[in-house]
Length: 159
Image (cartoon, rainbow, N blue to C red; front, side):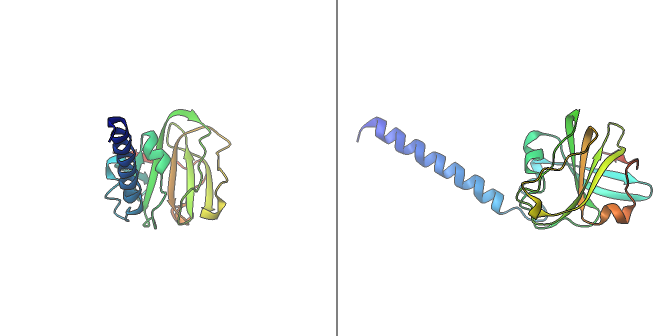
């Protein structure tokens, strides 16, 4: 066989194997997020005496993935997006399996906007804060009401 044909077959096979392994990893994300751990760091978000245990999405890969493909989010857990710029960051429900509450926070961790009970079926709608934010916090549906979050609430990030 011609060397060029063998090289092309090897290249196609390699791309197939890499793609398969990547998709296999995304399909096997469990509630412990063992596969995703390298993408996310961990922190706590404190509001009065209440504490949320959050994964932190600080890079574009983690922010793009967000909570997609997960089956659920435990009470008092969340995902905190940290952005490099102060902007009206959009959030969508692509590949989400459960509803959430979404909070946008300014540079001082003060809530500037919140959306409650955002459903997976809302995709491809994109939710924005009318006010620029540095952070976005996704929490289980109903937790913003339970914890008393409202526009103006001041949270604290503890690493």
